[in-house]
Amino acid sequence: MQKPEKKTCYRCGKERVVSKTWKEKVGNSIVETTEYVCTDEKCEATQKKDLRNQKNKRLQMEKRKRDSLRDRKKLAAHNKALRS
Ligand SMILES: [Zn+2]
Image 1 (tube, rainbow, N blue to C red):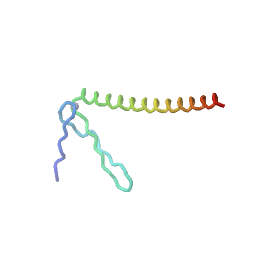
Image 2: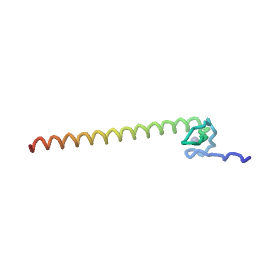
Image 3: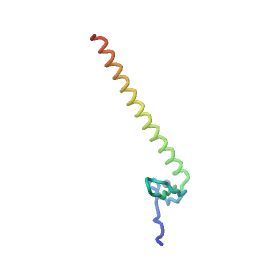
Image 4: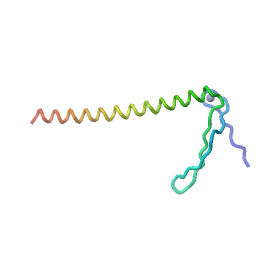
């Protein structure tokens, strides 16, 4: 059997270890997913925080997009009302 490939952290270069593995059903096949965590606790915590921030930013952007779309529709309706 092949030894699992050693992973290094892209942030700090330290070794990453398997935190958990689980099997997921994707379509008709079962895929084994492995989650790695950095052996540096601080680095790992920072990564988790970054991930959360990224998610928040994405959610905010989506909300802004929705809002501007709504405003544009409102404006269009307003302009139409003015013309008639
Ligand atoms: Zn790290």
